[in-house]
Length: 251
Image 1 (tube, rainbow, N blue to C red):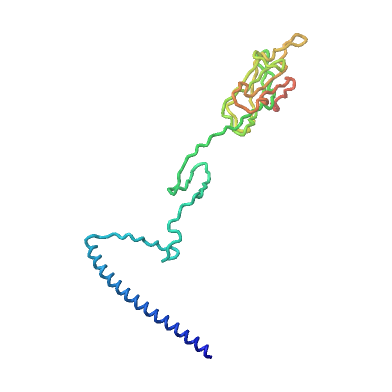
Image 2 (cartoon, rainbow, N blue to C red; image 1 turned 135 degrees about the horizontal axis):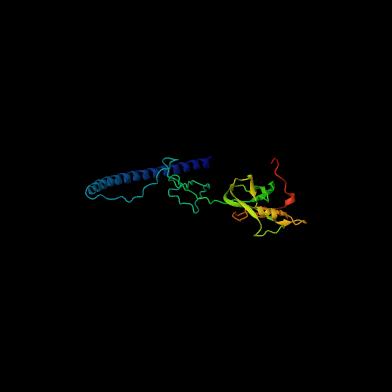
């Protein structure tokens, strides 16, 4: 019991000493603050009198501006640095107008598109006999030739269609021939053209009795003057024996 009492007395002494020290510190702080306040007041009037004649510039650092999201608090990054690799802007590709997204409106660009020529192809499909002509009346035989435009586009250029009579499948420049001009064809169009050979085509050969007879082989050729740029020339020429040429139906 005596020991417990001693502990209580010691604790009370420590608390009392602490309170005395705190009171002294507060008294000194109040006096110092009062003194500094008086000094500040005097300095302020002196500084104010100077500033009326020579304004002084303050070099104190300005506080950071308040954050928009947290008013009264400075932003986390007052001076953010730009990224090392700015994001790339991808723009759609168009054939005509372009919007480059520079913030100044749309920029119209007239893009020149190169025209690509599609392949052309004409073919000689068939030959039919219209009439045999008249050798005595100096009139050669007439034939109807069927031509087709195999192209997916119209043919706008003019090209020749020729008939040549011969006694072999070898064409010669001095053989009787006739031609006509085709002034273009629509894509996929099939058209008939009538051509009459010279009268000499009916007297190109002789029979066993020595009588004159017509030619034996007929050749029909589309684009015979090679005026078109085609992807296939093999279907331009059609060669047929005269005896195998059918007559035009209904005539």
